[in-house]
Image (tube, rainbow, N blue to C red; front, side, top):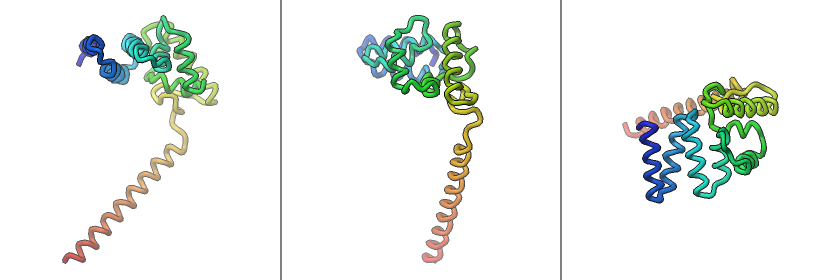
Length: 167
């Protein structure tokens, strides 16, 4: 479905009073196309209709006309932690992908504050996680692989045992 058609359906949903469906459509659109500032702003509008200042602040954070109170509510919800704010914006790619200079500057500012707080380089594609990931991410993956192999071994042993009982 095209962006324009999705936005038209959102308008239909709102006209019918179905704010939940409009929000769902917009969340999906923003997740698919995080660089579409117009979709973010429309999602912020819908969140305002529901009285959700935190989410309105999240989605209007990069907007030309954002409400400072909503932006502050979003930052408070993130514990004023710049890394959590960076993750919360759900941006991906580069700051250069932003369509306005103000959005680029806000993204650069958030990333600079997050990197200063984390003490290392962060990347938008990792949504605020370390570039390359910490060692425990790799250890967790190895642990999952080992657990899967053990489970597979147990299934094979169980199948062989059942087979021997039956035959």
